[in-house]
Image (cartoon, rainbow, N blue to C red):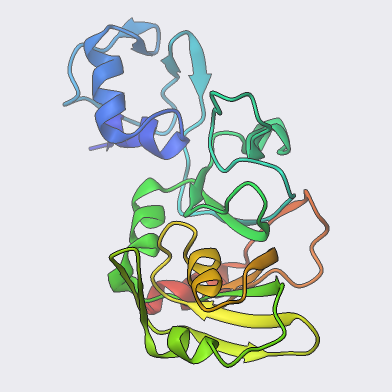
Length: 232
């Protein structure tokens, strides 16, 4: 038996599983030229799949890529305000990939992309407890308030888990978190009297950005992916 059509569509990055089923119900999915009218449909590797008239590529196996996100780009497929998205920075062959978590508009650095939506979901679950490390340049001279962040802090009714924070010289901090709540680093450091001026992610679990140039993408070695999978 082949692979369920909704999974193939979701893995290609065109839509979520639920979105794929909606596309099928609207008659917008064809396999080998024939309209698919049920989500309970299985395809083989050599089948030609079209969604809204555009052929998609089936993904064989798990692939993960590291991308050096530039500043002033949105981690989304479309921004209603017209701001530049990460997909406009990527070569066309990578534009069906799913992002793993988000980096905000001003944050730069390591962003992971994958062909597997379920893998992306697992990596961003709080239960996965995968550390993400940032270099934060802050507007602050007194770092004593950071102990509150190291012990766990509540800001505007939202509880944030303890962070690992090291002062690495000047106005720079190395910050590691495991939760990944929206704007977590910026919110917590501001509450501790150290508002963030620049934020740059350098690692996600065992995957490190190293010297990958801004705006470039490259595959994560299979050995590194296997090590990450073992930690889930």
